Length: 357
Image 1 (cartoon, rainbow, N blue to C red):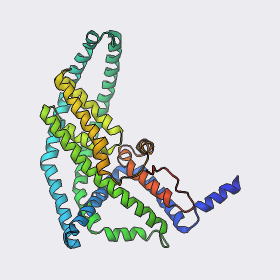
Image 2 (image 1 turned 120 degrees about the vertical axis):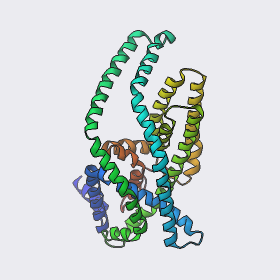
Image 3 (image 1 turned 180 degrees about the vertical axis):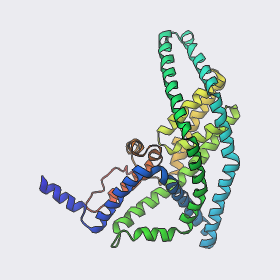
Image 4 (image 1 turned 60 degrees about the horizontal axis):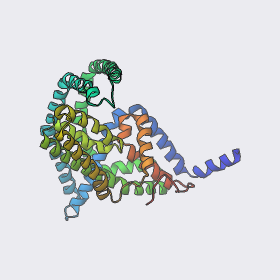
């Protein structure tokens, strides 16, 4: 047994590159576990710069120089960012503020609606079940209120941190875009030798992640805009805030769409009641989700990351439990990285976690 284990370890760590690569991965996991919130703006800046590299190469295809194409790509990023901060983010902030102020009224309206259910649906709900539900809701509300009080103490510090991140973000994107070659060369010096394994890992990740990152960007925009138009046509309260949540929900596979549906149903129900307008709103919203999952996603992700849905769900829960929200956010890239390392590691068969279709 010990002999077989020893042979397995020798086969896995059979050269200097694999040993150093393993140490880098282990060190990175430790750093991410303790400093994920601090590193978040750096990671997001790298992702945005990665998006801009694709735009830069597209601009270069029109016989424009590399330096000018980088300037144009970064200028487009600044223009989009300025538009968001002058129009979209203030609108979302106003609606979020309005929603927070309306929470007591919404809560009372919800309790009033629930209290009418035994009379409306006597075969499904009785008054005892409603009483138990009220007690559970009040207990949960007390807990939420206490959490809000505790989090408000750190509110000023959090605001300062967010403002600092906002100021650093375009600077980081600039350096990751314009100085990326020197940064990559510096990172490569850590791995000795011909770096065959690293080259294979990067080759696989570059193809799949470039499609994933750019595809997700377009999916967020398309789904978010479609949701905004749908909610605006019905005059749904907090429409801009909800449409942004719908757009961002595509970043969290499977779980995101379900989670964002709950507030939409509750707000629509309280605003329109159980009537034609409510059923039409929810029906069209579910149609949007169906089109996204069955038409838009296959169309955009023609060369998407080849991971089985079960692996994606596991990645969401595993990395979410390890790194919180950002673990969920980066679950697909992390799973893709693990798959690329597995397929490239000397001595390991590439029969893997992929769904090679």
